[in-house]
Structures are given as C-alpha cells and as structure tokens.
Length: 356
Ligand code: DAH
Image 1 (tube, protein in one colour):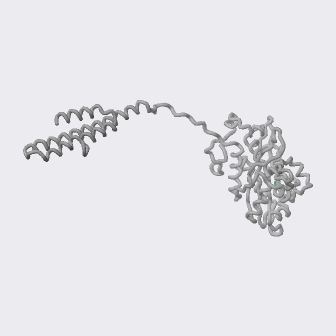
Image 2 (cartoon, protein in one colour):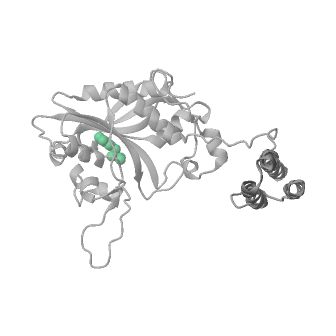
C-alpha cells in the first residue's frame, strides 16, 4: 500500500494537465483501478486482516482523491497566471477621443422653420425629388408652352431609345408637394414641405441643388390677410426681431393674385442686417392658390380657397447666419462645417430658443 501511495502521489505531482490527471484517477481510484482491485482482495482475508486493511485502503483512496483535487486547482491557477501574462489591459491609459459632428446650417434652418410653423398649426409633408412633369408643371398650371418651364433650367431624366413617354424631371421647386398633399388628404389642409430642388444654375448664390420650403393653407375662408400675418409672424420669429415686410404684386402661374415678399434690411459695411434699415430684400413668392391648381389637386375651388408660398432655405440660412457663399454649403469641407455647424443636441424650439 505504501508503494501504491508513493507511486500515485508522485504521478499526481508531475501531471502536466487535466487530461493527465484524469488518466491517473482512472488508473488509481477508478472502478477498475489498482485501489479497487486491492479492495476486492478484502473478501479473501480473515476478519482480523480485513479490519486493518479495509480502513487503510479507504484512507489511501481518500488521500489520492485529495491530491488529485488539489493538483487540479493548482493547474487551473497556473493556466490563469499564464493567460494574465499575455492578455492584459492598461486601464490607466486615456481613452480615444471621438470627434463630435455638427448640424449643417440647412438642417438647422429647416428645423427652425418647422418649429415656427408647427406652432401655427402647420404639419410637415414631403414628396419625391424625381417628379413627373405633371406634378412639377401641368398640375401647377404651367402648360407645355409656358416660359416658366424654360426659365427654370430643368434637369430631365434620360429615357431609353424608343421610349416615348415624357421624361421625369428633378423637381425644380417644392410646389408639386402641394398637389400630392391635396390628393392625399383633401381640404382643409395646412402644411409646409421642406426639401431639395434642382436647377441648372451655378454661381455665388446659386447651386444646381438647393432647398426650399413650400407652404400651403386651404380652408373655407382663408384670405390674403391670413397669408400676410403668417409670413410676418414667421419672419419675426425666425430672425428674432420685428421684421417689416413688403408685399409686391407679381405673377406666378399657380397663384392668383400673386405677391413677392421683401423683408426689411440694411446694407451697412457691406453686410446685410435683417430687421433694420430701409432697404428691402426679396425672399419669397406667394399668393392665393389658383383655382386650376385646386382642381388639379382634387379640391373644389367653389368651396375652398387658400394661400401658398415658397421660400429658399439656403437663402434664409445665409441671411440669418451671415454665410457669404452658397457653394461652400455643399463642399463638405470639415473646417467650414465646424465653423458654421450647430451643436447636435440643441434642438430648435420656440420656448428653448431657435439657435445658440
Ligand atoms: N415655386 C416657386 C419657385 O420655385 C416659389 C413659389 C412662388 C411657391 C409662389 C409658391 C408660390 O407656392 O405661391 O420659384
């Protein structure tokens, strides 16, 4: 028994891993191991011999089992130590800073305008940037021969050879959303439609893609006076100061009567300031929706009438935030974006302030 004990304790001490330990366990104290075989011999012994040999064998079995268990723990500890030597992390290192982006002035101004009109009960509607010429022109009372079609420098999509359907256009204004919204919800209606529009034009104040907001209010007793009040409210809220407006008679195919709206400004020192001085700056087109346009949208012009207006978001952003060149808006220059951008967590609201 002393030989057995010495042999197995020695083996356990030198076992290299858990697999080796298991093999030793099976050979020593497993069902058919050496200790079990010795226990079977107890039956052939005299009772006196058995009284000595039995407990001694049990003790041997326990001793080997404890040695196995202890070695198992020691092996696991060693393995962990080994891993910790290779896999370590310096938690005292400073973190990697992530650059915070900024909100583009176009997005900022769109949110500001939306907040102001939402307060006056206008919902936001959107339409596709690729339009049929029905929505972009005909439904808005701009027939095929009308000079406005040519004036707008329209981008047309390409049709396959032999496909004689009229081409789609990149919408030249947000006015087609008027028609789509009338069709969708019918009257009464009170919406603004912000979005991208396209015209083949490029200089300091024109880019081939720019942004407009269309406004539309239709009900049974809407007048030009409502239009005037809404726009005056809007400009004063947007520029944060009382802004005088001037309505000039004009002409648009989709409104009758039509008015162009100027806002009060000064030009001192070569920079424009809105809401002071006695110069005027043209900023939008508007009018009472033409009966033919109501009809095209499926609304009865004998029962309903309303006003509409269209304003350039880019122009508003340049005016409010003193940005001189429109082309830089779309250059994706990070220095420009950091300079003119807005904090991403400052949501424009009327109560919290439109911008900081
Ligand atoms: N659609 C016109 C443009 O792009 C702007 C406009 C003028 C919209 C008068 C209107 C309006 O709704 O009534 O130049």
